[in-house]
Amino acid sequence: MAAVGAFVFVPLAILGLYSLSDQWNAPHLLPTAYTIKWYDYLFHYEGGLSGVVQSTLVAAATTVFTMLVGLPAAYALARYRFRGRRVLEMALLAKTAIPVILVGVGTASLFYIWGLHDTFVGLVAAHSVGALPLQVWTAAAAFQRVDVSGEEAARDLGASFIRRFVEIVLPGALPGIIASAILVFLFSMDEFTVTFFVSGVAYTTMPLRLYSALNSGYIEPAAASAMILLMPSVLYLGLVLRYFGSSELRGGLGNLG
Image (tube, rainbow, N blue to C red; front, side, top):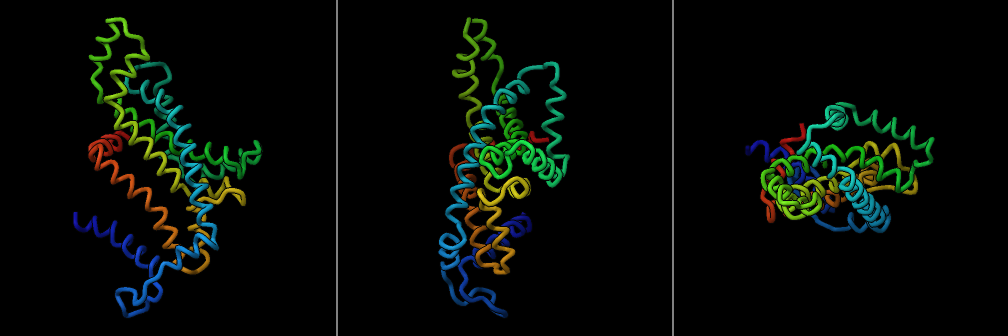
């Protein structure tokens, strides 16, 4: 466990130090001078603020669209046996089997034809394709944990589907649904490969700006970009542990396969 923790957190700590370092040369184990100039450089000269705003807007729209499409599918998978269920499951699982770069190339080809390349709608659509399986499986796991007997009793008493869902299903599944929404948001914020193919000059999200910073040959601006990208994930983990507990995340991710 300690080795796993070190494998995850040591690189993050090094990135954090690089993002704040003004001078760090061998044989020193730590920077000999610290600064926040790389963050200032990122926001004032590399369009970091624009990247954060664009990434946030795309992620928010992706989350809303994915929830509208994915929640009915998740509920159906959790509650019903229907014709085409296996096809739906295979379609959701296919995302994990197909290399992301192939998805990016194929999506870019279609978007050029449809006029969606380097557009807000195109980015949201591309991100939604990748995020939908994550949202559906996590939400389906949340619905499965709600006892169906209460819903059946309410139906026998004449409660409509909407009333049963709002008063019985939703309260029990809400933590998992919220967790799925946050996972989709984080997926969109961090998505690079497909974004690289379907975006251009008009939309440059934070992962693309991180890639550009790495290509500049200076690790410090890239490290600052990485730390900015890390902040939503840290906030998410804090919210899950504070309000829901880690069981919601484990339960959802355990059903991704």
